Every structure is written in structure tokens, then in C-alpha cells.
Image (tube, rainbow, N blue to C red; front, side, top):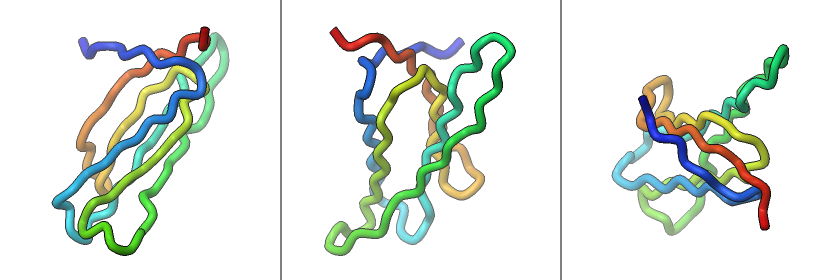
Amino acid sequence: TQPVYEAPFKSLLIVRVGGMGDQPLAIEVQPAAAKGEQSPAERVESKAEKDTGDLKEVRFEMTRSSTVRVLSGAREMARWTISVTPDK
């Protein structure tokens, strides 16, 4: 089984990857389903920024427990389960 990471409500998830050249980078966030509920996954693409070389970055504000997949095209590079907890 994969570990479950905890993050406070509204934490900013930042994924940075270098050495990808022209390959695309995106994250896909699938919220944990509540009983009888199915929410669609949200996909966030990296934005092209000048003067960053081949460094790519994607940001996402975590408001629900979710499974996050890091993607380059259709290839999954990483996957994390993140449990969002109340911010104290």
C-alpha cells in the first residue's frame, strides 16, 4: 500500500520537474469520493514561463482529500494520496 500524506486545508501543492525538455507536465487531482458521490478529476497543466530553462511547475490548492497523479502526457510519473485536515 502507498503512504497517505497529510496536509492542512488550503495547503499549496507545488510540483517542480526539471530535465523534461519539451515534454508536457500536468497533475490530475481525483477527490476522495464521499458515500454515493463521484467527483470528476481536475487536471492542471504547467504554464510556459520564460527564463526557466526546462524547469516546469504546477501549483494546486488542496481543499479536499485526493489522489494526485503527476503526468507527462499519458505517462504517470508519480502518485500520492493526500489527506486534507482542518487548519488549526
